[in-house]
Length: 354
Ligand code: TXA
Ligand code: MG
Image 1 (cartoon, rainbow, N blue to C red):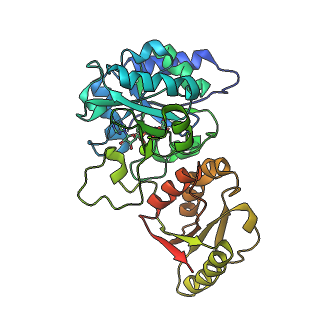
Image 2 (cartoon, protein in one colour):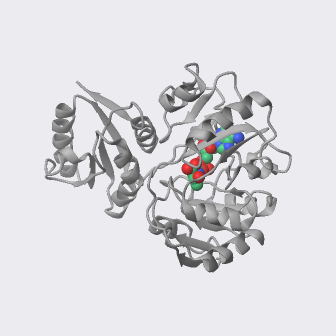
């Protein structure tokens, strides 16, 4: 057990004494949980091999799943990347539009980044977050910060201080409470190494955003296609993440029919002794009269859904739900990120109601 210090920091009025304390922890090889606009990260100096290994231990993370390196300015990128012109040209074009922001870009790595970060890959994921606390922490530390999401491996990513506290209290040196995360799902991971730019993990920066910037040949990894024996480009794609304790199933199809089905199924499952959670959108508020029904936002505004999704999944656990029935949402644009995370929470269980 480590004694974990907690600092509450207001992103709009940053207390630099607290930031300096946290930066010292990073410089000395410690672990700091900090907010970003996507999810909370569990950070250590990206140059410190032992500290990075401690991240994997604190999370219980498989050691073949590489970490994202967070930078605060363009100069820092040079210490992280050592990539050919075609990759850097793509990176600069995307960075000009979307950095700082919820976008991670994969390019060839600099030898200064230890293998512990990249898990032996020749590449590295780089992100410049927009959250002011994250930027201040990186700047004050003076080193790029390697950080996965600050959850125990397999749990939904943390989008509030309380989520970090549940998972990592006693396992890290500091947790910064910077309030709830804006976007709520992890960054878009964009591979710039291959022949065509390719989204390995969907997020708030969409395929349309990438195509407008890097051309129509950019593509999106089809996460619904079974991987079989194919080795995924992004090692994280093969793990069932985000799973609440409950058994999740997604229902897709005509929304009226989906809702009628979920309502009937809820009654049936309750009779069988299950504790049922229902994940729905605002337009069904009041419709479900049995089970623990949670609305996670407006289906026409997917950024409201991303913001609340992981908190909803954790709340079902708090209620002791054994089963969760979830309404599908439209998979276009940011909706792709919502459905990707839901799909993985459900271990791929998606049923179309006819
Ligand atoms: O929004 C985010 O990206 C958050 C915040 C903290 O920045 N971080 C995050 O990290 O989600 P993590 O470790 O939970 O997810 C990183 C994903 C994994 O799926 C990993 O396999 C992939 O990025 N990844 C990292 N480096 C990679 C590389 N060199 N090549 C391919 N995939 C990589
Ligand atoms: Mg993660």
